[in-house]
Image 1 (cartoon, rainbow, N blue to C red):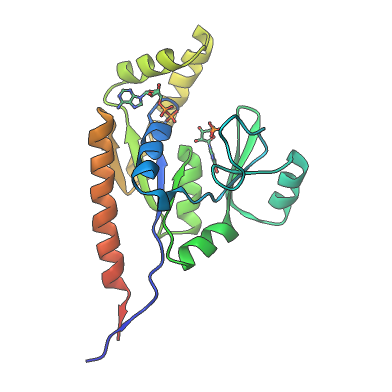
Image 2: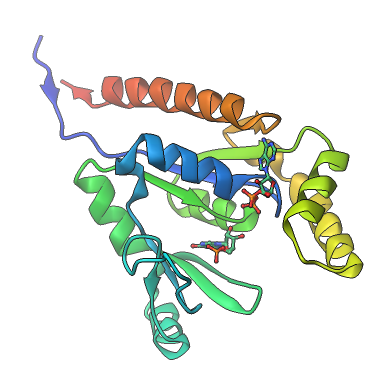
Length: 201
Ligand code: ADP
Ligand code: 5GP
């Protein structure tokens, strides 16, 4: 019996949560532990913030250029978030995965589902807050938000959480260390599975 080991594609991990669910915190820690996951495939029209590096956190482009890229079909998905445009580049994703690089995206719930539709291999992880009370506390704790903004975000969160069952995995973000360790285990199990799948006759 002959087996050939094909070049392994990288894993595309998509972490989604309602606003305040902890996706930025989780992704930041995951990338610190595995810098290979930091490869940026996202474009945005928002202005860079201090510490942002072009091509590392995002590729920064003008609104006009972003519009041209949408017209050219450059994105797996794109969305407007708080007046800024964000999009996941199909070409950069393909390039990175083809080279065997891993990608971790922190993306909203609809964005995650849109990617999965076009790229079924994407590994979708839904971060669930342990309770709505905790989520509300986190939203209040980090924001200079007014009452109305928190109310709108809580309403959005309720709607977004209706989609958790369409995700491949659900991780309860109770304590951050626990969530990171759950996701690391998922990544290990999935990369073993992917390795088995690449053994061909
Ligand atoms: P998101 O990116 O999903 O909007 P963030 O990562 O910005 O969420 O988290 C929102 C707030 O909740 C931040 O202040 C963050 O420090 C806090 N937070 C996130 N996860 C936890 C956790 N497990 N325990 C305590 N605080 C958390
Ligand atoms: P930030 O500007 O803080 O990095 O991101 C702001 C928001 O945009 C976050 O809620 C994040 O989930 C969302 N976001 C970041 N990148 C993308 C992307 O490529 N696609 C979509 N749909 N949302 C994104």
